[in-house]
Image (cartoon, rainbow, N blue to C red):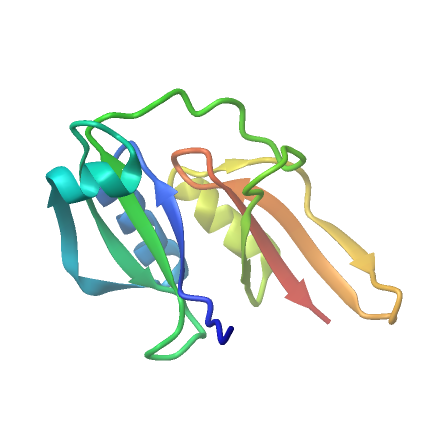
Length: 149
């Protein structure tokens, strides 16, 4: 198999608001066209009767013109999301490398995100120092902010 990482999907309550957050805070860029799917093929592919999804792909910074995207979708039918936590099995977080973790954290919080923990610096077994913290986007999805050096 020859595989290439393409995207990570987040199902949003308000995909437009969440897209604005990732564009404004992290510099992601929309990749047209917006998605608007409904009908028997979507229902068959998702296993969700009556499904209608809308959303957008956002090019992640640093990956170039063909780099991976963050896919933000909203379904007309949503199920209970359960508790989000950094140690819950399954999707944990996405991470962005930033120049200044404290400044990036402040910007996330000013744009509707929330703090999860404190900013910490740890040293890897190879002796490299990484400063990082967890925050959330406005819908509670966990983001790691990190800086090396």
